[in-house]
Image (spheres, rainbow, N blue to C red):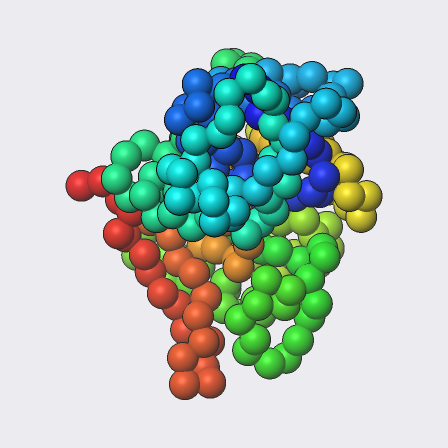
Amino acid sequence: MKIAILQNNPGLCNRIFIWECIYEIAKINNATIVCNWEELEFLDFPNTEYDPNLTGEGYIPFNSMNKNLISNNFVLPKGYNFIATCGWGFNRHFEETHYREKKSPKQQIKLKDNELSYKIEETVKNAIGVHIRRGDYRHSDKFILSSGICTPDYWFINLMNQYKDKYRDVRFYISSDAEKDMLKVFYDNFDIIDCESILGRKANKFRSSNAKASCPPDGIVDLFALSKTKEIICSVSTWSMFAYQTGNKPYIMPAVENQTLESIKYWDNIKR
């Protein structure tokens, strides 16, 4: 049996969360996952084959949120190949179960280039990660906790200053879809490293509205670098979620309390 996941979502991390759910369903059914994601040229996913010509033709659609499938403990009929149609709203049972009780499937995803992977770890291992989501988010002067609204610069700056007070000679790894001129206040006031520090050249930013677009190799490096940092200051984004869950790192997430933008620091997913 094969279970296909097509590249029908522009967000790599959104697709990875869907893949994680399907990975568990594939284990239950002794099935192999097949994907047409271009990122699989650079990334090694367990129990997953890369087929650039995959269209889904001949596969039977199914959704992990289907009540009959859930009641049948996710067992699929034998003798058929299936294609997952679930989106970001995949069944939360897997998220709750596999993040907290055992190693998350996404923690097994690796870069195929071992030398590059080592360089990433050596570059960022003592840095504090900062994910600043800007490119496709709306700016607002109000504190609106939403995946479509930017978190204000000063929220990040306040936390980064606290880290400067706590750690001597602290460095920050910035992961952002914004160009450097939008991030000037950070580069001017903090010791910053970024994707260019690893690649040794100007990094290509992800700027596509194409629903079938891929995350470029530079973006993959950026994402994995963020996951290897010491702690992570997050944006409200699956990019941040992938980084702290994959790296099993402490993280700080924005939250609105009493009309003031506050921070929530999460340690519950850290193995003591």
